[in-house]
Amino acid sequence: MGKYFVEGAINPEIISKYLYEQENATETGADIIFLGRIRADIIEGKKVRAIEYSVYQEMAEIEIEKIISQISKDFNDINSIKIFHSNGIVEVGKVSLFIIVSGKHRKQAALACAELVNLIKEKVPVWGKELVSESDFFWKENKK
Image 1 (tube, rainbow, N blue to C red):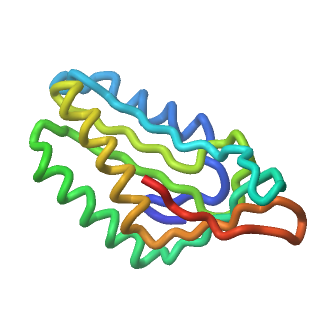
Image 2 (cartoon, rainbow, N blue to C red):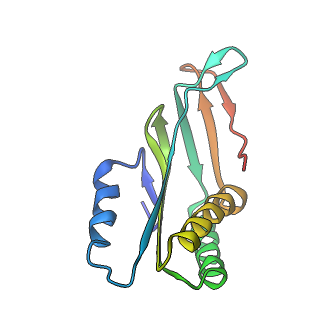
Image 3 (cartoon, rainbow, N blue to C red):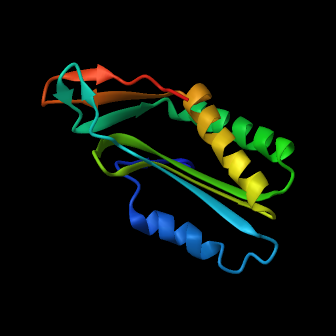
């Protein structure tokens, strides 16, 4: 779908591909991975079965580029950043956000990854409908 977005859930093949790419990264001392999964939350007595994401892709990719640039400046220890977010329907238990931050040291990579998650939720134009039945849903609120 785009540079940072995939249709549906982020499958294990995508995750393992980027882990494998880091195998010979001799300047990297730490890879910090974040996998955001869909929870079976209860909202107003109804159990979430999936989230349907909608992305304003052109603007979202610009915002992600800005975020990566800012994180790279703030954490100069970082070697690489990969981000993938789902678009469309993602069922409970599946991965909808995958981030891998590679850096020389674990502390900087971990801090950078945590900041990335916060900035993505805060700034990237992605909306989620929490689906609780075939016709009933709630708009998702992004929380830090």
